[in-house]
Amino acid sequence: MKKLLVPFAVLCLLVSNQKVSAQTEPLISPRPLTLETAKGNLKLSAATKIIVRGLPTEALYLKDKLSVSTGLNIPVTITPKASQNNILLQLDESKSTDFGKEGYELVVNAKGIKIAATDKAGLFYGIQTLIQLISVEKKGRLATVPFVTIKDKPRFSWRAMMLDEGRHFKGEKVVKQLLDDMAMLKMNVFHWHLTDDQGWRIEIKKYPELTRIGSKRKDSQLAWRSDKRSGKPHEGFYTQEQIKEVVRYAAERHITVVPEIEMPGHATAAIAAYPWLGTTGEKVEVPVTFGKFKDTYNVADPKVYTFLEDVLTEVMALFPSKVIHIGGDEVLYDQWKSSPQIQALMVRENLKSPADVQIWFTNKISKFIASKGRRMMGWNEIMGGKVHEFTDEKETIVKEKLDQGTIVHFWRGTTDMITSAASKGYDLVNSYHIYTYLDYDYKEIPIRKAYDFNPIPEGLDPKYDKHVLGLGCQMWSEFIPEVADMQRKIYPRLAAYAEVGWTDLSRKDYTYFKNTMKLIEAHWKTEGVEVAIADYDAQTEETKK
Image 1 (cartoon, rainbow, N blue to C red):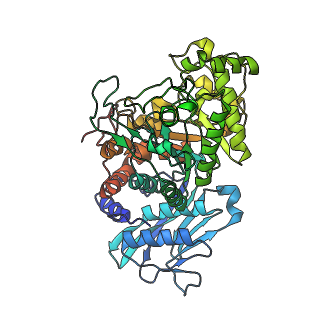
Image 2 (cartoon, rainbow, N blue to C red):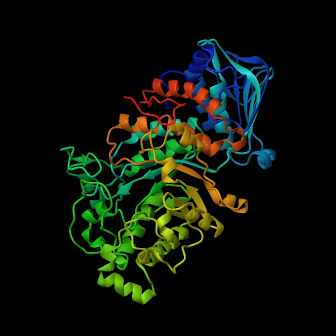
């Protein structure tokens, strides 16, 4: 397990001693559903034990975190001696009605600490709350926890952060840091954008040119619509063994890694590796600029489906996730409109528009993914409709119907599109770009705006609320090559999105959140994370280096 440089609990103690908040309710991020306090504190000492049966991963995680934060070497046991300051981790299926899979109950009183949940995920989230409650009095000798009773569960089942490495490769160390911080905030989906026009970042053994050629480019554009270039090549990809390690690391933190393999557009890097994949068949290079590109897979060629099925088969062998993301956004239809093969396909399959072609293609991929016991997800262009100004309305009118089992990832368009999809029974994740894009600066998405985002849109009939699975926040990396710059975009807004996903609307309180953030920001800084300095009370906020 990764050890933090400075204990979070120590920071809690230091900040609370400075009287950051006059509130009597302990500061926990994200804020729990219910929290009752009582007078008194429980003392943790060398005599404390972690009592558990059959939960080695969670117990050892807690042991490691307590060792770092308190200096106490608290053993794990299934047969404790009599003591009144033990920590009990307990699975209790009877609580499923109240807490679901991810909820938990945390009770701290004179008898000890008890975390109960119906599933290991709930226990893990209870552990995260416990860690935030601990104050250290004498390092290595004594720590205290206030008497509390907490009953907690998330508002949404999908609480995601996306990292785009197709544009700029960041590497395993950076990814693991993000997973640690997501876990602390009870986020449970890491959406990993691994392929795009400017780079293919995942080893596919059957097609080695994808990484030998597709993972490298000669230069990089420095700013939108700019002729300035970095003047140096960029490359990088994950081996399958590295992918397995990231997936294992995430699973220990109850985070599902959802891979995104872009199709049928954003495919230039793949086509550069294997030109026969493209609609024109022409040789291309991995682009050094960013934006939208005309290169698309030739969806009329059976060999292209064989390729994509081969790729997805290797991907699904690496990722246990029940959801596989296929992108599907920003497809330029120019090559399809001028391709005799695509035009013949449209006649043969009675497809009336390029958007119909995309839905037809997407449904073929969906059926293949479903045949492997998985579920397909894609950006909301996969439904058709005029999402972008660069498409002609006639191109986006559709008669084809997207497979009902698809998860629609809404990011752009009118809110009518998301309410329409939900009312038709499609499950959705809401990542509306004006609220959730982490590459946007703090003037466009100040912390308060991120915090106030509601994944359930206005106008949606409450009977369809169940189709909104949750939200994702996206870290697109076109013009953010450096890790420090990326971190300042992510932190502190990540905590706001975590609260959007977890905390019930009735419990949201921006003042409470701001006070909590004083602790969270201090913790991040001790990890060496670059945190944006922002005025939480300002309408617009600026980052400072």
